[in-house]
Image (tube, rainbow, N blue to C red; front, side, top):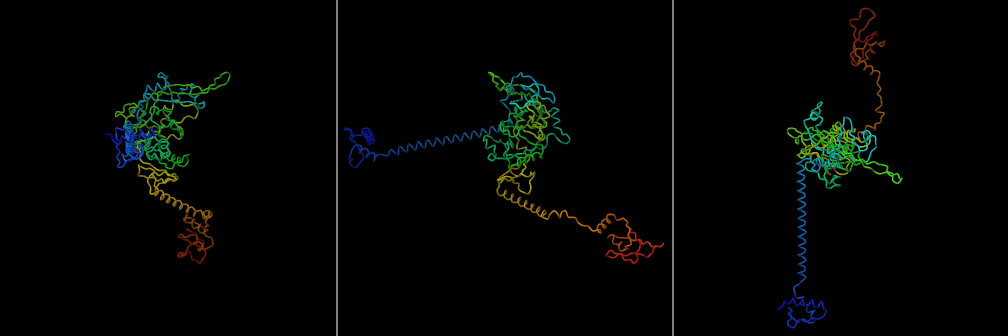
Length: 571
């Protein structure tokens, strides 16, 4: 016997397909689970039978629910996989950062000696011997460096790379730079770095949400244990050349980011730069500070290497075509190789114990690797005799105002920061004082926290309001004092005191106590009024012998009583 559901299914399908009445098969009696007979057509009977059968929609909804659950489980699995991938990426980034920290600045594996020579020019390029105070021309269109200087600026590109760079530590030049000259080392004890929220160098005191450069490029990341970090990628073989150093010294150049960081060897130029950024720059900075950097542990060294330079110069050249004066661009190239010696300072922990020469890549792989350069020492080295651009005013290294500037490659470690000093827009606060330092030009509530990370700007509404109120009270009191002084008028300041003759005479007598003066016929009373000092009289009689008992007595008022007029001398 068949199940009643089978019969209802057959009835439903037949009625829906043919649209006519259908009767059950003769040999099979339909079994319908109803108490009463079902009148009407077979289709009605089928519909009524379906009302007593199990609900198929529940099965369909269950299938849908299962599908939804499967989809949700798949989505959860995908999310978990994405989270795991993100965690793996973060772990990989941390591992890469740790590896970078372990190997210091890092060596350029892509820039090996042979690859550099093949990329920039032929290996058998000619050597250029450069004499003292003479520039190497290596120009594809001029034979003399003076012709390059006299010509105007041209469309040119210069690329340089170092080949086989070796660092030495025991030469005579290094010994002179390590020695003290006149109780002053060529390497100062402290260096100073000026920074602000819009600076072109990443800083650990400025978060990525408040740094404009971070917002423009989200891929920038400040590595661990770095207080300052350059935005450009460090490539030592490329960066340790004249062209890259001059690129860094050119301000406001957005393309081709620099991998150098500027510092100063004195606090005065750093404070001057802070005032410029706060009050005179086109982009007014609101959170300016100066970092005091220690130079302990740096020793003098020299990089000796072959520098391969490829120079491309594009000029306008007339090319007549069909009688028309056409001008086309012609690019001429020249590749040269020269020997350079660059004075630098490196970390003492990264050099061999016996101070033997070491390859640049080997030193940079060591943890704590650093390279510091002085622009003054570069000016006196043969780095300045490398190829220069066309034009008169193209010299950048050694320009006025750069005698106090130093450069470091890539980063400044947090361990070298002594402390930070805030510049509030009017003055530099060298040390902690009783007052709260706040940003005077900022509309936000920025105050200086001396204890946070050796000094940093933080937002605090309460401290900012209190400090600003106290500053306004002090300013108002100073203005009131100046108003009281100036309200009296200038006549009181210029009014002369009138001094009587008696006072002048008394002053003269006090200045010259041994002065003798003749008293006329006024008598002893006039003589007693000459001064307030003790006066002795000698009476001269008209006869030979003076009176033995002739004395003058002076009362408390300083007047002398005598009856006769005599000639008196004041002794």
